[in-house]
Length: 484
Ligand code: GLU
Image (cartoon, rainbow, N blue to C red; front, side, top):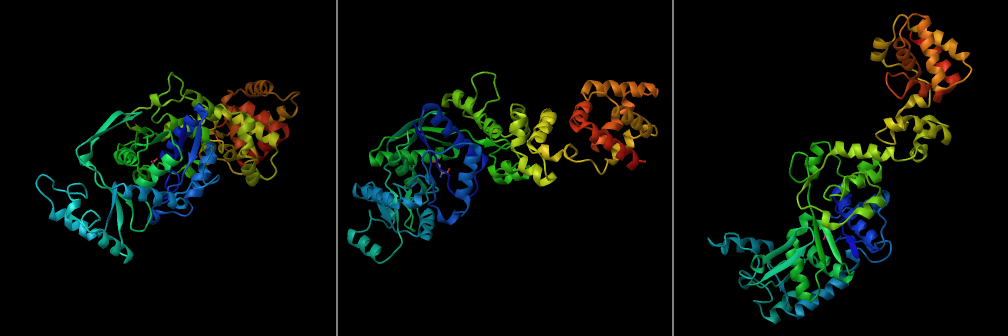
């Protein structure tokens, strides 16, 4: 199996592109095949300079390693124009393509001139080409003269009417179309560069692609590609078109409607927001593919083992940001505290100065169940430094007249506590409260507030164990003074 991900560098890699890359990569890895990255950069008007780098970086971040690509050889279409020129010459020589000189204005004018009731929107095709300025209507001498005179021209595929073309899409089944309905597509633009259709087909053939797996938006191009394969006398690769990713409010998840709903579309945005790459891939895998059993949470290896094209559905699937966040949490739970802390050391040190690896692992262990993102670890500042402010609403609600006395009594009892475990800290708290004729809650809430500055967090006694005796007692004392 040789598969390719063939993005156009017209923008940063978006999540739909990452899903296409993922499906291709899974097929390659599952079958021991080859995953190719091809940069389809023939559209110079939409070219974005740093898009290719973003695509490469994003795939690498996601863990989708590339076997063949711009890093290993000529896999940018702009570097392969000789191949397309040779292919065009072949088609021209075989009479399967022709040169056309019509300007955009002339084509516009034709649409009006040749419109009939039966064909209100004529295209440049078998029914109109004989009325146009091309190498089928002009003499060979005139064609040669116009070209050598520098007149701009395109090369079109000559599509003859009257036959049915059928191909089997691995997701959609048999797809058939009449050649009458296919226009004489442009293969080479007037800037000399090939169009997407030509370069795509020539490359898929040249790179010996066995399976073309791409988004549904390319399904309508496939008839043109099949006709091109036929014109060259090449075998058509297996085709699979993946269902559209839909916006939560319906319709294709375009950049614009995603933005309106606060859904990031670029992979780099998910990366910056702290998503685990495996969680994002797991979620994207399920946008279109139905796993064989009940299991929903997959590692990348698990996906590789379970994935198959025959469980990819046809109908569009809605993107759900909350579900993705849930997947992220699930993946975090499956990670070790060492792995979570390891990825945050740089951020922790930037925020809090000297934080040891061991300390970060202890913090990650304490907060493991409470984190939505690994980067949350950095946001729990009270784990790494004493609070200097205490949440006002929490103080109002939790810091009562008897709090200073109770907290001070607890602090004094803690100072003398023989061992520092969650159990001993808890029984000490309960007995202190009892001695003062108060319920345990009268002490639990103020103590939490005092040591953390906020009213929620991990189990209080686990937190105190983590902080240790000195820090706990110090923080209790500081809070009593500060909140007086
Ligand atoms: N260059 C096209 C894109 O940007 C490739 C489509 C295909 O895979 O054939 O998605």
